[in-house]
Image 1: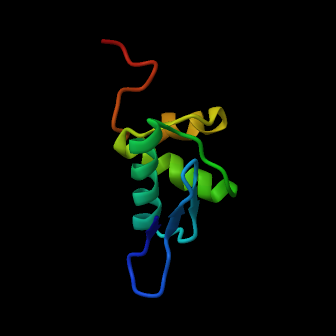
Image 2: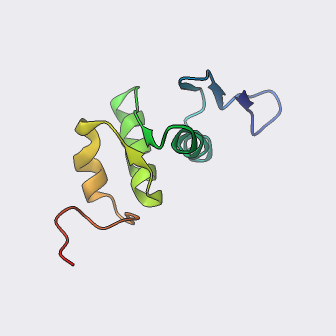
Length: 90
């Protein structure tokens, strides 16, 4: 399955067990994260540090669970985080 927001471009490809993201624009990354969350519930991010940080920030804003332990600090500090911080008291 291909996600192509514009004619002649492919934002990401669904390979069944993973997604190959070709377009790092916010809308394309968010669509890939949302599809991944629907398919697997928890998402593991691979790629450059900048790409992983972008994914972690977008995921935190929308409540998408990220499996990467190295991204936890980014998720914990993300502005607009969609769920309470781990240290929040009820």
